Each structure stands twice: as structure tokens, then as C-alpha cells.
Length: 126
Image 1 (cartoon, rainbow, N blue to C red):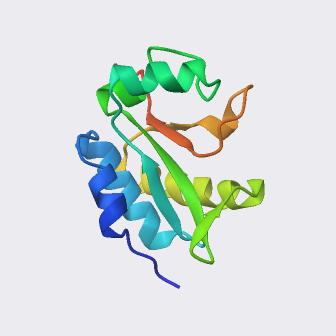
Image 2: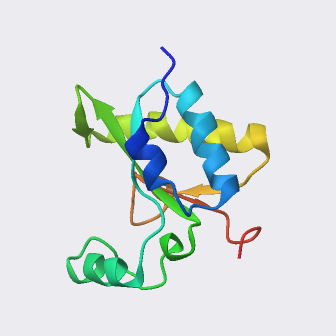
């Protein structure tokens, strides 16, 4: 099945770096799991609130510069947090990244796992 990004997801991608936007748009076309964009560009205030709530561990998030997105698996018209779904989304994001030659990092590969999080590689996009 081929998926597409809905209006809400496209709206949430406003301000996201064009290269990351290209990766997300390609990934939804090839993903075996539908996903929605939970968050792209963030304000410093939003980031501060997330950190205070324990949902983030930094005030220097890549979301602040539009270099990161959080994606949510969309199953039966709701977000599904089942970890295997995020592995599948990551496969599509990594494939899109390779096809487009736009390096990304996935939070699911980190020591402290963040399955919904994808960001442009800092080495290429400081």
C-alpha cells in the first residue's frame, strides 16, 4: 500500500530543512507502515516545556533549527507506539536517505532510544 502525508503532517513540516522534508516525503511513499508527522520545527519555549516534562533531555534540540522531525506510526486512525512499527518506519527513512544521498540519524539507534526521532546528520548539516 502506498501512503501519503496528510495536511496536518504537511503543516507540521513547515520550517523543516528542505532536505529533511525530501526524505520524509520519499519515506512515506515507500514505507510499509503509515506515519504522521508529530513535530518538526520547535520554539525554544516548546523545547523548554518538553524538557521540564521529561520528554526531552536537551535545550539544544535539532528541532529548534528545523533539522529534526518526530514521526508517529498511524494505525487505525491513531498513534501506535509499538516499537516494531518504528523499526519499519526507520527502514523507509534510511532507504529514502540513501536514495536521495541526504544523511540522517535515527533516535532508535542511540543509547537512549527515541524511536520517533529523525534528524539530519550533524556532520553534514551543522
